[in-house]
Length: 78
Image (cartoon, helix red, strand yellow):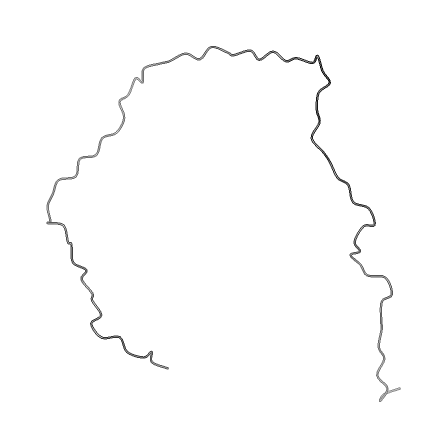
């Protein structure tokens, strides 16, 4: 069978869609159910080391105009 083409076809796909769908709704507590939330104390502390402060010394005037400006748009080089 050198010239004959052999075709293999799988009848069952490897990843099949499950036949069931599970729907979950919110759970509602029955009437008369209550909860108690305990709030733990949180201590407010003072940092031992102060935060870093960076002061930038103005050494160059700010640039309000861009350095590269395209005056006339052309077609791209292909």
